[in-house]
Image (cartoon, rainbow, N blue to C red; front, side, top):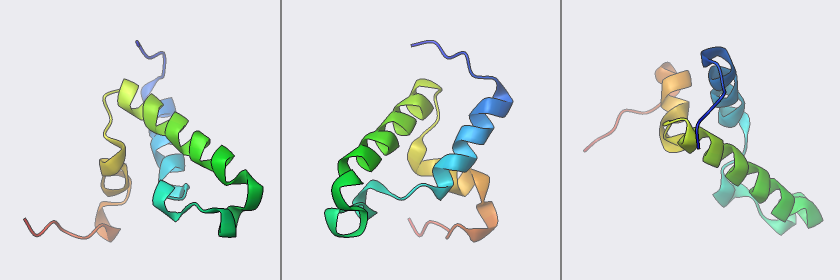
Length: 73
């Protein structure tokens, strides 16, 4: 899928994604009946990032490099 996102829009999406909960943190206890909707939203954002050649698992380090632990491998 070709993206129509500008660089600024993609950067804004990356920033927003860093504030979203991680899917592993979303559960029915904390999110109630909305937990599946929250998971669906997280997956939608991940897909758009992937469609724009951005690894969602690397976004936090790109946006906040000073607060991301260094890899040990």
